[in-house]
Image 1 (cartoon, rainbow, N blue to C red):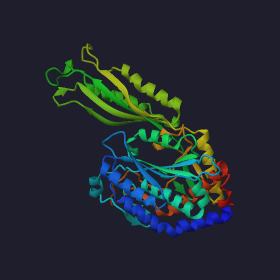
Image 2: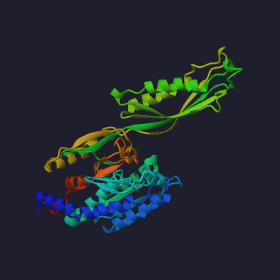
Image 3: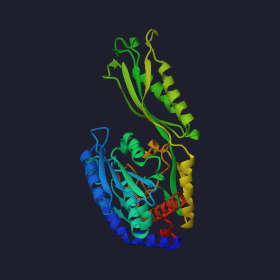
Image 4: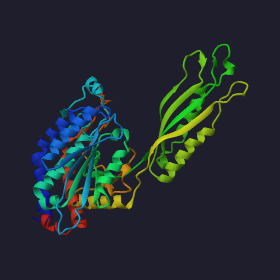
Length: 427
């Protein structure tokens, strides 16, 4: 069977089984897997392991480093060695958790709902739909390119804590795949416009800060002049932070929470805020951190006589480094782009502001992202009659094209980088 015929057979296979794949997705969406619901996360893990067992994958769980969360899931299908050579590995990454507590789903009547091309539901595109695309690819390859399928060790890795940024999962991916991995592919949602699939080749890094202001309390009526208002000082800090955002350089700051004061008849002595910062480039990332930490020297609010000045303290709580454009990711994108062209598509590289697990392992493993289905309104559960609010949805029509593209690109990857012994499957 030549590659053109194989491509057509894979497309027909995926079309024929689409309703079965969507039935599996519906079952996944019915399980609440909010990150802070470890029982639900683990239940989804067991369901996922059962689904992949049909392809002879062996399941293993690894408890998240935070015992309050669920278990990461690792599904492995060992490849057959040819002529005693090492068997290459390919990693396929998704995650189990969502951002929706069970009571929020119930309150907003947020459940599986089909409306035309759209399918609504918690996690339907971010990222349970991506897990189904992985299953679609592997089932098609097993059925129609068995020599290639058998020649690779496939490792499907599902994060239990992706939505909270668990870094231990990234280390787990590197450990299980190792330097011999041909690729580590991330199945976060991928935009699709017209005939243009968008593939993610870079992501911003993020820094989370805590800002604290120490002021001086005083009676708001009889001793107002003796107070140094921490909330007022925080207002100045916030204004300065917001002014650091530079859209032209893709550097953004967001003041997410603010708290201060105790009662209204007291000049507040304390205020606190949480801030996040994002940037693509490492030099700008470091510049942004330096600018935030420079706020430690800021003091613009004092008592009326100037004897006491508010004190600002800025500190980094944690950070996720940027995933910038790099040679190994670009090499994978070029391969996917060439494959897309052969299928009549025009693949587009996308640099995305949000984080993914790829941020944690792109330096050690060749990584490409955005390989899941297309949809919209990720992380949204509300809807309104006027349409100004709408819930997370996936476009059913993108499952087959995305799985088809990924299947053919994987075949090309194996042929180009591990060709010997696999040519017969796609020649």
